[in-house]
Image 1 (tube, helix red, strand yellow):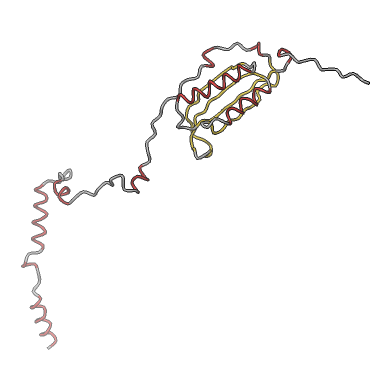
Image 2: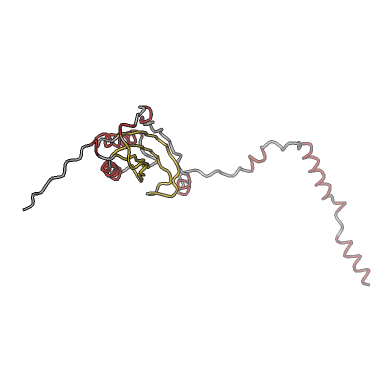
Length: 204
């Protein structure tokens, strides 16, 4: 009967580490404290699975290429790290169950690296706090519901009280009115009776 042999356990130093990039997108309305909690959770996962975070960047709010979960914008966070294959699976599992995260993607950068080769600057892994942005509400719906007063047309009294246009004064207006009166003077209006009488004489 053949004896079964156990394979020797693979130590951490013998495992092959890889370099990855993960970009995850949060909702544009995410609270700055919630954004901090998400990135802190990602850092804890990388550290707990013997990985090393190389770079952490807050890319801020950006327009999405297409609508994702009814959102046209999102908060982009970039992570560059080195670790083992189980690290990626655990990181993505946590991102998947976080409500504020709407999309994420991981890319393999280098298939074989040594964790000792990285000298990380603390400033490169410091997460820049997300700024609070107050988005203006669209008045279209409120106006349709009658909650916003529509701009009213100027009244006749206001138009009469408005100052005259440039190059046009009260004297010019008086001259124009006088001209209009002259055009309607009785002397200039033909006598219809005379026209009728003249027509009769010609026909006779």
